[in-house]
Amino acid sequence: MHLETLKTFCDLVESGSLSRAARLNLVTQSAVSQQLKALEERYGRRLIERSPRLGARPTDAGRLLYQEARSALDRLATVEQRLRARPDVVTGSVRVGTVYSVGLHTLPPAMKKFLGAHPQVTVRLEYRRTDQVYAGALAGELDLGIVALPGRRSQLEVTPLAHDELVVVAPPDHPLARRRPLSLTALEGQPFIAFDRDIPTRKLVDRLLRARGVRVVPVMELDNIETIKRSVEAGLGVSLLPAPALTNEVRARTLVARRPREGPLEREIGVIYRRGRELSAAAQAFLGWLRKDLG
Image 1 (tube, rainbow, N blue to C red):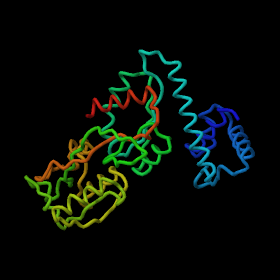
Image 2 (cartoon, rainbow, N blue to C red; image 1 turned 135 degrees about the vertical axis):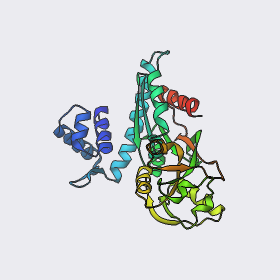
Image 3 (cartoon, helix red, strand yellow; image 1 turned 60 degrees about the vertical axis):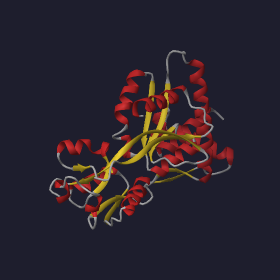
């Protein structure tokens, strides 16, 4: 079996498309099909299921092969980078998974400065739900995961980075937008737009409100912060959101953010990666930069 075949298979799983896997590996789509057929014949198992609606998706056997092949390819890439690297220059790529609220608003300034200082490093940034970031880090698909309120798990290393402040968010014409100072008790009975229940920030907000005896009326539960902001702008309810994610809307005066009198209310931002994983020089440099810039 050739390494190129395993790489093509991994690209097929990650892209969900034979044509995209072919473009990534500079081969024809039929060549990708032939390589997949050879793998399935070698192991006597079906590895990929195809459908017009969902595209190419791995079977259970395909997921197992993908996880092990990706881990092996990543280790090999790390070895090659270390063998070829000049001691005074950091090169290579870093695969990072993060949630929207962090990746779109907290990371960009630090990433821009890092890439300016290390032009030979490529950062592949992927936006995922929190549970998918954990799964990617545990499976070795991601070098680093960046999440809010990182949970401690035996298989993961956690590096704290920073804290985001949570603020009350309302449209400019809402009565709460004119209150100074604003107490969390003012949210009593308000229509409230929340994150989905399995998202850590939702659990934190629920705890903060419950601790102060405040009962809101959840009218929507959404899985990403951009949709929540648009819903608040539309006047569908108010919310508690991280302040860094509101800079553009506050500047444009489409939203008003108010620090609660009980504040500051904060959520921790941290990096996770699989325990025992040897980080590449590029990943170590990126992690060190984040700790310095955000911490």
